[in-house]
Length: 189
Image 1 (cartoon, one colour):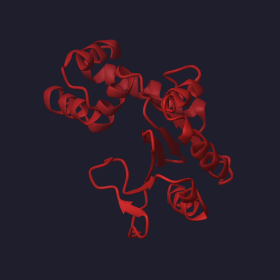
Image 2 (tube, one colour):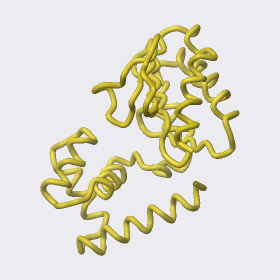
Image 3 (spheres, one colour):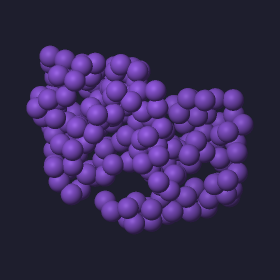
């Protein structure tokens, strides 16, 4: 999906939210930011349970309220730079992974967020997150394939992912890792 198509889809969804609720997006963003909740999932649940939102609409409002939606920052490179502040040793791993991921095809959409980078095709297939000063986490969406080796079930780590790879050594950034990301990419097509 092109950036223009994504932006148009987002604007359509915002218009639908405003039409169905009778309130502007800014109103709902203020409600979210004053709710007292901080975690994304808590905020989505709050909008669904207290205000009758669908999951998709609640998710979008929370992303806009927390400025984590695609396009929130004009220069998304700044988001990536900020993610690796104090974790500069992990940036070369990220760069190596991205060099290989970009060879998958022209349809890879790289969408940096505050804490991680989302990799999308028709849907999100992976995230790359510098979790600690010494660990990069790769989250994957792969249905029907059992985790093995250093690939774990994502469990409660991230509800958007089925698999997780903890990268704590440069040696893990290899063909196997890229192969797992490629499996997720192939399923997202």
